[in-house]
Length: 312
Ligand code: UDP
Ligand code: MG
Figure 1: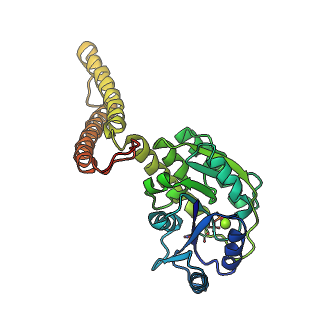
Figure 2: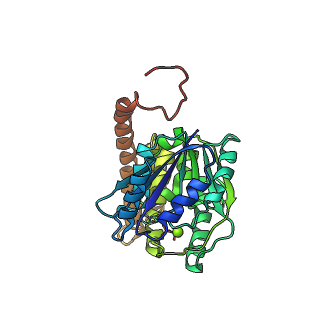
Figure 3: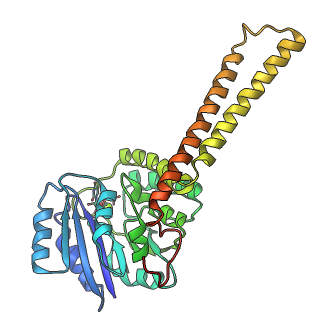
């Protein structure tokens, strides 16, 4: 069995050597590769990783020209990894490699993704409170019950990893993306450690950006094939509201002789009807685009089916 470790690194010079040793101490007799993705570090991280790679053939390093964010780092690792099972871990030693075998046991119960749950978190309150809110909203949005979407420590099946396409701050929603593609997602509690070296790269501003990605992921998971469901229902709602207001105004005018010239409500009716028609048209355009791309992608699209003994 070959294990891949994909580890995004942004200025973590003090942790890397120890992390490498701890991973090696916990993989048992499995084959392994460790893929460090240097996300534009400005400290000595790259030199340290390079040294590790020179000593150990199984260590690989990808270096970004600038800081692209954790999701881009993970994706670069996913693209090149060759293991049967793929771990992602943070580079700051907060995730404890002692858990490796527990992850494997859980995955082998029949999951494609096992996500860590930092049951007892060792982070400041400025992180734990936003994280609680984030998890609550995410569970509500995607209807996949997890305690901790955003734990960096996860184990993936190879198939799932090769299906993912993440960017921005989308790493937080990987369980939701996997769930929407029909993969089985589970979680196990993991021991979490306080950050020993360096400092956290995530403040409140990244959470804000994360909420835009929530929207992206929601649209991508639920409506990518059927944009008219989304825009059509918004359009229908707006149009109907406008139509009813217009109807009311017409009745008042025709049967009771109320003049329309001094009714601001008339503007609202016109606005709602116009916007409604526009939403509807956007949905239809979306359908046309999806239809075209579907034809192009048809050959590549293995996400919806499993093919057994079927050569491409
Ligand atoms: N990281 C990265 N690029 C970034 C920010 C973070 O590769 O732009 C890495 C970082 O080096 C660490 C992991 O992502 O390995 C998690 O970051 P951090 O520990 O700062 O997040 P926290 O644990 O505080 O949520
Ligand atoms: Mg951390």
